[in-house]
Image (cartoon, rainbow, N blue to C red):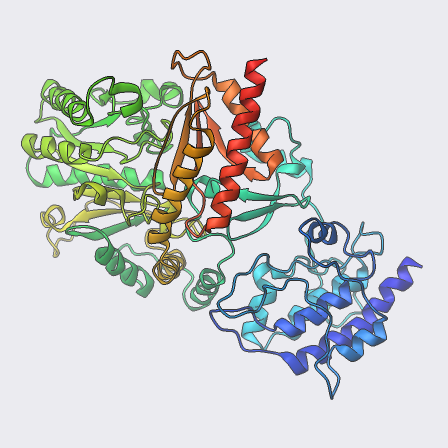
Length: 617
């Protein structure tokens, strides 16, 4: 019976798909998906009563209309008749509207009537759909871009298209997951490995492979600034991959996306931050910034200047060099024996913890004196740079008062030390400005960027230097200074970044981050500002947090194990947040809407109130 059902799918459905494609094939464009009617008809073919299994359940949970298939012959007629355009009801009302919101990309599967195993013919049909689209580039991108969730698994030697009939496993297994090194860290111990497999995402939402829908309240790791599922970036990646997937930028070679991106960054960054050295990760961007600083001083005839001053609570990466400037002792401790001496760490100005009865100006002056004294103590002739995050993310969203960066700039200028701004997290709109240093109207000598440069669609980072600094390196030298890596200025990653920045400008995401950040901050302050567990709610753009304290009024930080319970409480309510140390942190995608901000406020506030009730028992 089940096999007959599958056989019927192979016969009737393939005719429906082919006729639908002949009639409804559409050329792709930037604002909407391709071949929408054809794929809607395809949905109806695959929606065989109970045959959508877990995927149908996901749509029912979201309140969508679950599809029920009519007779296959009727579907075939509706799929591409000569006289009519009748088709099955769409799975998603929002898909296909030019410029409109897309709530969730269609995700189809060919399953048996019990929703357990893929139908053999159904899987072949999905694979064959991609094969038939071979000459239609736009529609092919739609299928191959991951919108069709399953491809054929069975290879039939007698099938003329057997070479196209391959499919990945139906689900990610715990056995597979255990091959990941990161599996050894259990941040969500109450969930099984299988429950933590993220399957797909759209906007500010992600879905697990088991169908749970969650708001991405931390944008991955404060990465996905433009939101998930932006087709423009995927298409830019695909086009560049076909045109030029890779060529090194060593030995004076370059490529168009890299050059265009470097020019674009020069137009966005403050002051004369004009020259970019591309890398892959945020860690490497900070390594490159320190290396450029080192070569700068060597070129200036001051080879003893090598030390880098950093701040407690700061995190700059996971390489050996960046661990030397890491302000998180528990991370840096294993590598202490490998670190050079003189890499001093100082306390940053933390208004909530350090201001006391004084003012922000007095706090800035005090921390500024400490910075100056540290450089003098080490010897200005040995100190290369001061590196700092405008907002110390890993330290607990520590937000120094406006004016602190100006003080650091002044101390560095006085003592002939370079200033490096680590904008890996804060860059590209996260704080409501293109770059966080703009809040202080400061131009650092070097600026490290990553994360938001591509919104995480492909890894890319950079160290951006001022024209003044770069000027000490002649353009006609045959000797290399900072050695780039293999993937520096990767053309595909740079193409992704250009598309990402275009979205940010077109959708006014920097301005939206400022407005939605204010809404999120004020919403949280109103909802939980008076809670005995909340010492302070603070924010800058879409970096917002609640600093949690013991409920006895002492102001002591709340126990980290108690705080960690908020991860589960928010998960159960439908959001992924970041509760570490004594701080609940929120950093959603910059495309978040007013309604989604309010939802995130409700989830965070109800989670904290629930924790408050538990601690009061």
